[in-house]
Length: 190
Ligand code: GRF
Image 1 (cartoon, helix red, strand yellow):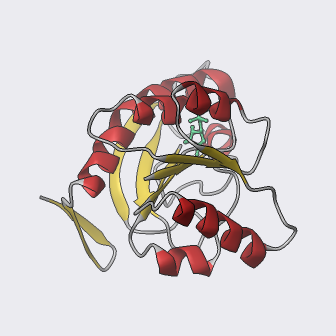
Image 2 (cartoon, rainbow, N blue to C red):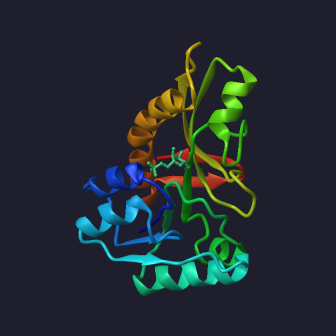
């Protein structure tokens, strides 16, 4: 699998440390992403594919970088770009993402801010397959996280990430082991 990460890489670190998973490549759109340092330290080949100003060109380069390492699936972990159709077609039901809300509530890059602004009492984590719409593909698993009255973005995100670090490796391992079956919008675990 290749992990695609743009940021800190805390999910990447947990995925690398999971013995069930073979992370053979890390791809980032940002050469200075802290995620890359962790991956390099773990001896995993890293590539940087900068934004090309054009989604299809960018997606082709991501696919090329993934193919160089002969990966079978793409695991998005804080990847802040949207992949185009070429990736979705090359890796059908083989691209997953972790999102910090209970989708379909609060898709997009500001899920935690929107949850706080909406005053919800419960938010959470969603792991889902990636399709051509943002934060939209079939849901693999979800876990709730309580919102406290005094939460701010940082405190809520920290609690959400603790949950991500538990559920994401489980979901990715289930994918790797062929234990996920998709029927329309429903994902069944076996
Ligand atoms: C995670 O909270 C994830 O839900 C969101 O981006 C964040 C990435 O964090 N998509 P990290 O880089 O794995 O620490």
